[in-house]
Length: 626
Ligand code: ADP
Ligand code: MG
Image 1: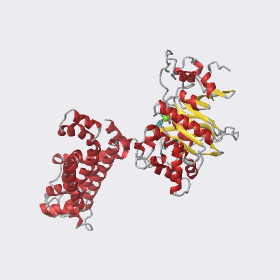
Image 2 (image 1 turned 90 degrees about the vertical axis):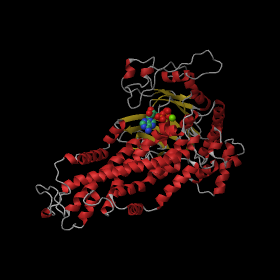
Image 3 (image 1 turned 180 degrees about the vertical axis):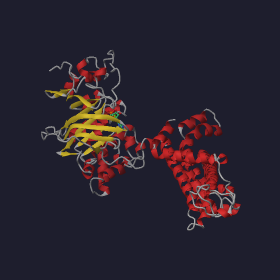
Image 4 (image 1 turned 30 degrees about the vertical axis):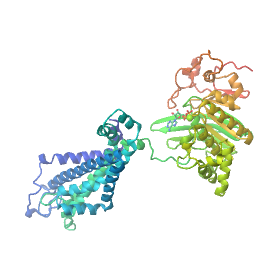
């Protein structure tokens, strides 16, 4: 149902669907329509032009009614084209599934046979088959079907191979199912959408091929006529009576075009990767659309900060919805300082971090306001080349899952060399030596040998060390670490945090450290900014905020951290969920979950009130001890 409405929403596909449905309806109704006999010749009425009463599309060189011939010819062409597609899909998919599922020698045998078919030029092979079988519509149908078998076999084999060793197939095997049942109940349902897609995109092509064979006189034989043979007959009279070829030609065009439009629509609707926009390549830098100029975003830069973010707004525009993932964030980081950015999952931490270097995927991401100042330059107005130099150069990132960010097919040393040489022209050997020294620095034992390992050969902790070494590759001033320790177990996490802290002091690195764990912030960060629903609700020096949080949300977050030796304390979870950022409540976004919320909290905009070296966005903040 969802698929149909998706196809329907695609205007071109809907148009194609309507046209082809109309054509099929007429073709099906041919026997009951008040049409003249398509094969009755009448030499007295030869080549009557169209729009003559009694012969609306005119007549051909034997005086046969073209309208009747068109309807019956369409019927024949559609039937043959569709039948050929079904036969090709059935044979090809069976071969593909068998070959992909059993693999080994079976696969080799079938695929080499298919390769042989593919080695001949398409049309030549079809011609040869018809020549061998003798002309005739049924033989043309076989020829077109056979020629298209390899297309299905190859496609479906590829999909089956990737399915044949998946866990659910192994599970089915363990439960004692026979091969046939596994194919029928596990494999087939998964490849069916692919078969339908392949069919919908090739049916038009097959109708065209059948028409081609008939046009050459190898398909339908007189007096029976399909669109192709009508075109062939009309061709001889192209100058004197163009309508005789235009009528079938236009119909072939209409059918093939509408089938292809519909087929593309079906493919887009059925292919989940296309639906989620996998083919729409995101731009190299997030789109920036800041309107309402004149509004002054500048935050006083006192010259001592390395990174100053003011009023950053990042949204996702998905269909009619606007997700305000980041809604007016201000941050400042000095050289050598560690700023913790903390909040529940979905509070906008990652989007904030990615927005700084304009790495949010666009579409759907759009930066709609603010300034990101690095050393006096605004990255939001910077040209692409400048951004490219900054990324991985002065500003680098560490992500949560190094297995997903490291390339599986290159050794870690090679990846580091690549990162270094993307920014500096140094000889390969020098870059390699530098990589090894960095790997040693992040305490990878036996780094010279390890540099030749692949990511999958390392443990999680090792991989994250490689991630850190990669971030250090070009001697950055600022590292943005997005939950770098969340995927690690506690002991490894402690080691990695200690390493980051050490590196930061040693190199005077600024660090923006994203986490959802106040324990981690306490270990590492000088200052902390607490995020909720895309806004910063509290910021201040870590020790002070931990000691006496001002925002009720911060207080609740801190209470969620377990402490050793306090076994009897009940851990307080925060009831409820963060609000969806496409539908934020007015006033304080935390109000619905806040025990202290009053009516005022649910109205208007609540500002981030500065107080001494802290700031809090709350009308009724907690008592702050001096
Ligand atoms: P976290 O704080 O856990 O890192 P994120 O910054 O990843 O959270 O996400 C912030 C918000 O942005 C989430 O509520 C999420 O729904 C929204 N969001 C992120 N990516 C997209 C996207 N591609 N399309 C729509 N919304 C998104
Ligand atoms: Mg995140």
